[in-house]
Image (cartoon, rainbow, N blue to C red; front, side, top):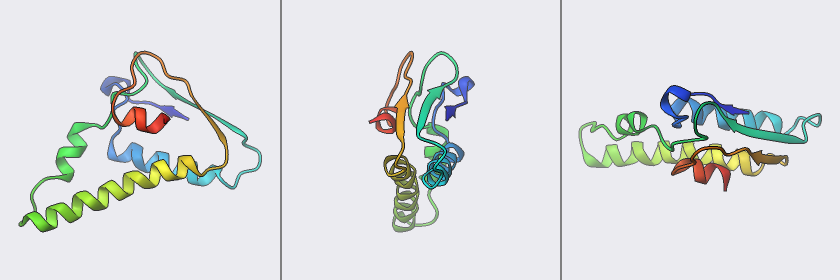
Length: 109
């Protein structure tokens, strides 16, 4: 499994959260996979959350209540990615190089 956004220092975009969630969900039932190497393309492993994606999530949609619900929904979605990784039942080895910042640390913890 490879973080592949070297131009963004592997910052975690909304699409990457989906891919991480789906990948680890899919391999959880695959008996032919025992180990996953989690790597990052480019100069560093991960620079955390892609702030462009994060600002889009928090964009106002009328009132603060609806904005808060949207942020909570996306946060739960991100947590699903971490949960699938944690519960996939496979050995996951994070091959960290360069730097690992913010959500990247959470990803490998």
